[in-house]
Image (cartoon, rainbow, N blue to C red; front, side, top):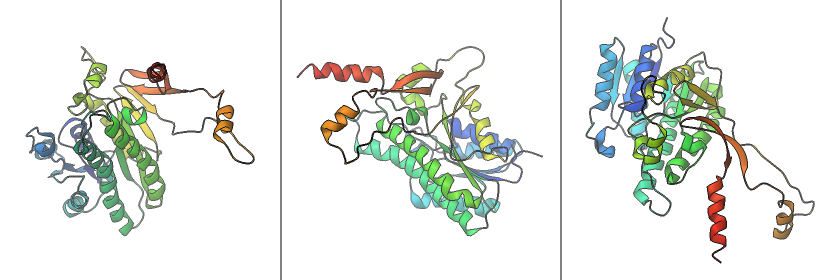
Amino acid sequence: MPLLDGKVAIVTGGGNGLGRCHALALAAAGARVVVNDLGGSVLGTGAGDAADAVAEEIRERGGQAVANRASVADWDGAGSIVEQAVRTFGGLDIVVNNAGINRPSSVITMTEQDFDLEIGVHLKGTAAVSHHAARLWAERRPEAGRAIVNTTSPVGMHPMPDGGPYGAAKAGIAALTQVHAQELASLGVRVNAIAPAARTRMVMASPSVDQLMPRSAGFDRHAPEHVSPLVVYLASALCGFTGRVFGVEGPDVALYTPWSVERVVTAASGWSAEALATALADAPPQSAIRAFYPGGCIATVSPPNRTLKTLAATAKLG
């Protein structure tokens, strides 16, 4: 029996890239799939029939799928995706929040539209679809086997320059993953997130990312289809995790540790600025971390050395 036999899944942003691979993989595992994709109206690609094409591809392979073109950034639109799953297939078991957009910019050059698009599609979209799914599940009895798989990013876990709104949205998704895992456990819902490093149209909008994902002969560790087995696992009864973030790049899967306190200082009668300066004088200005960027897991520090060096250089200007 297929791993997801009888399950109903939603994949947002399922018309291209990672979403298309996820939709095909879930269907191959036995799930009936609602393929959501807004198409080209936001991205300017003209790919308005992307959701239809993937749904048809699934049907040609013997699966069941329907297309949906609602915007996840629209609250009612997000609700319509869940409604279509129930109307077409009778229920909902799996939500893969994958829809995204990328408008690289610094805090100096970004526009309000850039910021609103990033937060709206990534963070609000994830929250909105999850909300409507959770409302449905709350109206029905608790049931094992429900799952939400969110999509954060290495940039959300290890923020980089020129990725402020994107990184903030992706970091917010990691936080939502932990919150929703706690809130929905009583309904039998496991909530996890992936931080994929894969070569897709969206991430290639960042030239620095493109350089980190070179094309080479043989096994392509940055091909998006290598991410989807992790999504199928997280959506299945084989997974015992909830509230966790998994990095994935080709053959490598990493399990992230959440934020953790590094040091505590205490003053019996409260602090002054001067006393804090003394108490923290020997605290290192950087934290040692293990980052999972394209290319694998590396030992590094946060904030990066270049940030402190740049700041020190500007201090000399005074």
